[in-house]
Structure formats: structure tokens, C-alpha cells
Length: 339
Image (tube, helix red, strand yellow):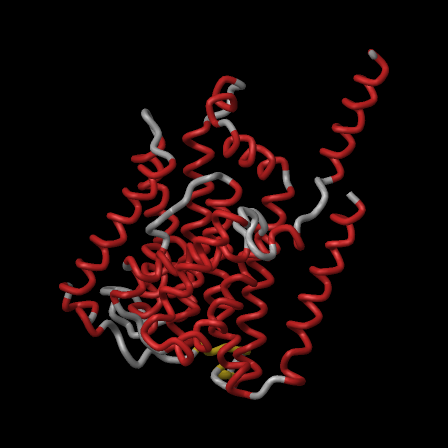
């Protein structure tokens, strides 16, 4: 327990390093980190549904891509009857993927609930179908996607500031990363998070105890999908384009690797896993050429087999919330008294 308590210091060190990075990193490195943090938000959204609820979503890029396309269509004024607006883009990027996740949840979890490999296969099929639709839908750019998406702009009264320089862009990405992390961290440490882990470990027992497991899974899936959509919106305004690849098989596979290597049960570990792997990818591609994906797949296999908590999961694991430790201590004291 003492070792786990010390892990709080790791969280402080990560935050301090993130805040001080602009003092030491070059502009190009800051820009890359900003983009990688967008992937980190995406990874945190998957870690929530996979690590806390036990649902491995093979098609999670569907929600990321939906968010990216919603932002692109909004800022370029391509939505009939709606003005061009980044604020509207962010709202739609969160709401639309969240609604689709609710629809999927009601379809997959009600009645004979899907889980495990069956759930993964269905979500993967949905992502592949969505990618084919995007490729053949000319209104949203078809195979080429949507290009020349404007950079993020902040409005203060009559003044507008375009966030395209490395340092402002970095702190904007860091701000969104902290907000998403804080939300998911609070959910995981709350009674709702405890219930999610109970469902993950034994959803049949949770049902017998009176909990509406399909509804809880659907709500969790909606939260995860909405946050993945937010990450997609940030991708669109940082990379200035969206394409069908954002909703397809390749990105869905990549994010699984990021989360598994970092640690699916710890939100911060998943975030750092995405940032780290994206940094390592450039090194592997330069060193191994076209075989770098094989090396990444090998690392993923090693992690799943020998490090089920990921490379960082154990280091960043925290002690139980105080309310659970108090309950556990009371139960142990009662058992000792009876013996």
C-alpha cells in the first residue's frame, strides 16, 4: 500500500514535465507533442471502456473519425442550415459520436448482451463499413477526405487569436488532455467507477444485485465515444484535414496497441502509452523501414502475454479510494473479531 501511495508522486512528475516541456523542447517537438496528446485523449477514451468496463472495442476509431468529420463539416460550413462555427463543431463532435455509441449500446447490450470477442468483431465491422461509406461519399470528400480545415481560433470579445504557433497549440492540447483525464479519473475513483469494475469482473453477479447492467454499459460506452469524438475534433484542427482512414481498421488497431502497452486499467498509463508509442514509431520506421509495424505488433504481443497491466500500469496504479479502504478495514476488523 505504501508503494501505491508513492505513485501519487509519479502523477505530479508527469504534470510538472508537461508544464515545463516548452522551456526545453524545440518548436517542432512541441508541435509533435501537441498532436500526440490528441492521440492520448483518444487512448484514454478507449482505456475507460476497456480497462474499467471490460469491453475491448475493436472499432473505436469510428467515434474518433465521426468527431473529426463533424468538426471539419462544421468549420467549413458544409452542414445545411447551420453556420460555420468551431464551437458548434466541438459540440457536434462530442454529441454525435456519443449518440451513435448509445445506439450501438442499446443494440448490443440489451437482451442477450454481446461481450468479449463478439463485441469486438461487431464494432470492428462497424468501423470498416463506416470507412467504406466515407470513401464512396463524395459530399464529404470521398477517398481524399476534407482538406484545408482552419486552425483553432479563440475569441475574446472583438479579438480573435489563431492557435497555430507551437507553444499555444501545445498548451491547448495539454488543457484538453488534463480536462479529459480529470473527468475520467473522477469517474474511475467514484462509486460509479467501482460499479463499472464490478461489472467488468462479473456482470452476472451485478445483475443479480439489482443493477441495470445493459444501461450502465451503454452510458459508459457513450462517455467513451463522446471523448473519442472530442479527440477527433482536435485532430481536425491540428492536422487541417480528415480522411476515411480516421474511421477505419488501421487506427482502431493502433489505439489498442497504445492502450495495451501503456496499461488499460490506468487512465494516465494509456495516455502516456499513446504519446510514447507515437514517438517510438518514427524511430522504428526510420530504423526498420516497412517492417516497423511487425516490431510494434511484437511489442504488443509481449505486453499482452507477460505484462497484462502494461508497461506503466503497475507504476501508476493508485491505492483504493478512501471510502473503499475504510470499508475494507471495517470488514477485516469484523472478521478478526469473530475469529
